[in-house]
Length: 425
Image 1: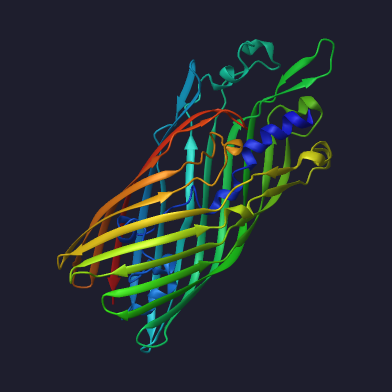
Image 2: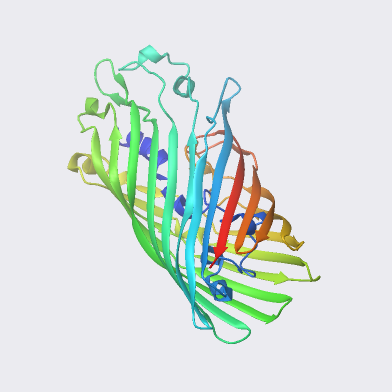
């Protein structure tokens, strides 16, 4: 019974460490994202609060900015030649907002807020449970097997008070304090357990739900070097944030095994360190070319311990209440271009984002893919207003998993339309 329960709980909990990437928003702001998210070395608008806070020191007057993303994922999972399912057509919003104000000639202060991560999957899963237990019929279980909801919804919101300083004509420094609120919700079938009756009873554990949330804090530090008008180099370090999440776990029919149907649950998840370096070059007066390398310390996601407040849950799962994820560090490669036509600007970019998760932790609730991503967009500026539009298309590399939590063929693509509006006072 212990082993069966832990395996089903693992599918829910193994992805809690994704609060900062993979399912991370790979770019905030229509302009930076349209340039492939290669913005650490440029960072010359209000979205610098996310990319490189040193760039905020380039703002010459009070600035307000608002950016919105709309993620439209489309995924398919094939269990075997007889069964496959797709996600429901559903969108997920994200964005950034900020206000920044110069104090004298060298200091800019302000406040930003952004969704560091956000994604979800809602599967049209009719018949999935029957396919998992084939060739046993649904009526073989107690209670009889039915279709359950397979859904995930993940996000984190970061509040970032900011300061940036122009040290001299060519060096800028910046920092933010990051107060993050994360949430993680999943629903799935809880699989089965065997009661040692005569004959043995195969219990259908029914719907399983998880709902946890909590806070964490960290910081972002940025450096921007501008030795000339045609060249700038940037470095950004976002520190690890330890998220303390708590809430409830529930399994519909677990009372048939003599356990309460729910338990308060808590876990600590590290949001790993992010290091990024970038360069921006203007080979022509109106043309800007950018290039970034962005590294995430995913190896920190080794083992996550689960703590169940209910003593019966804690006793039943004592030996197995830990998840070994075996994630690996990843390095994103990004590049972009912008051509300024005066009031109008056109942009394009590309980035490569390798999957940090190995096959053994792959599952339908939090699928992890290697992405080749293509971006494009344009902007318009008039008087004190700037408006930008962008479109990002993430092409996930198909993954065939033969062993692990949930073997099968995984396919994914994501469209992300974006819009940003900025106003200077």
